[in-house]
Length: 262
Picture 1 (cartoon, rainbow, N blue to C red):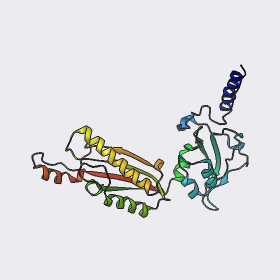
Picture 2 (picture 1 turned 90 degrees about the vertical axis):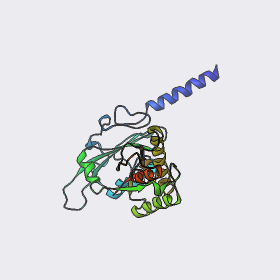
Picture 3 (picture 1 turned 180 degrees about the vertical axis):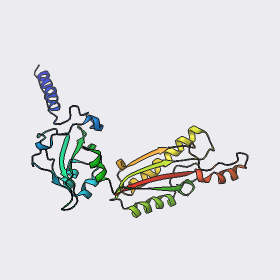
Picture 4 (picture 1 turned 90 degrees about the horizontal axis):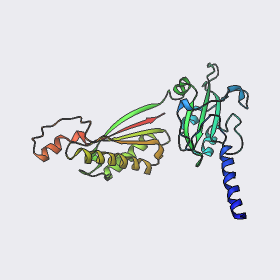
C-alpha cells in the first residue's frame, strides 16, 4: 500500500511540475515547434528593465535552432521578462536594434521557444517582419552547382576523395562561423527507374550533408532533398549508344548547394 502511495505521489508530482511549465503563449507543444500565429509576446512594459536594450547584431544572427540555453545566454544575455524559476520554455527579449547613435530607435521583441525535454531552442520569432528583415538584411545566398561525376562514382552515393575535398574547400571559403543555412538537392539523369533515381539523389544529398557535418557545420543548419531525374538541364537522344548517352547526360547528374551567410 505504501509503495502504491509513493508511485501515486511521484506521478502527481510530475503532473504538477509539467502543469507549472512557464510560458507566455497559451499553448506550447512539448517539442517547442510552433508557428508565428501560435505565439504570444508579453507586453513591452512588462520588461524587467523597463526599456529596450541594445544588442550585438552579429551575436543575435548566430542564434539558431538546436542551441542550448547556455549558448543563447552567452550571445544575448538572460531574458528580459520574468518567466519563473522552473520549467521555463519561453525566453522573451525587448531589443533596440538601432546600429549607431543618431539612428532612429527600432524596438523589437524576440522570442526563443525551447523543447521541454532537451531545453534546446526549437522555434525562434521576431514580433514583426520589419524587425526580422532588419536583422537579416545582410543575409546572402550563393548557389553552387557540383558535378555528381566529380563527387561520386557512377550510380554510387559514396563521396569520392575529390568530393570530400570540394566540400572542405566550400567550408573554408565561406567560413563555418558565417554559414547560417545550407540547402542540398541531389539530381540524377534518366538512366534507371524513377524510383531508384529518386532514392540515389536523396542518398547523394545526404552524403554531401554528412561531409559538411564532418567539416564542422551543425546538422540542424542543413536541409537535403532528392529530385531524382525530374529537373534535367539537358535533353539527349535516347537512341544514342549507352556510353554516349551517359556522356551526354552528364550535366543532369549534379548536386545543387545553396549556402546562406551573413
